[in-house]
Image (tube, rainbow, N blue to C red):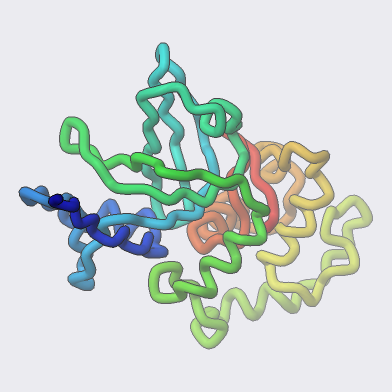
Length: 221
């Protein structure tokens, strides 16, 4: 009696969305995978990201994911209770494979799990080479000088935090304006007394210091 020999299931590799997007999608007879710039084959992936938006068309669901390094859609073509329950702002751990449609990469999930936003920080520490952050030694003299500024305005949202980094002051304002659904970016820009607040917010999003839980809203990790 002939027995079918089953191939062992490959481990899902922890990676970033940018590494997937910047890699080359390769289709072979027995296996499809993404070949990264580091020459690593990604057959199955493990991605941690925030749900930015969700679209439904019949049984087809598309979820846009963002992990701070880039964005990629997750697509489901059949009824799935777990995916149906996902909402914008959720943080997901996704196990699955990379596929392409019209030359655009997307994730085909084998399993998804809602997790705490704290896991985003954990992932960045696990894979520092994929989630690069600016070192303190690289802080410009202008930023150091701003740290010494004392804000005497009694209406300032940063009163009594004059020795913090500018980014720390922005985090404190975000926490103050966050009623549970995140702080509105337009409110932050209106109430911040720091110069170039919008540019700082963009940088903080890119470096994973804060995340966009809903369109136009941000939260502190």
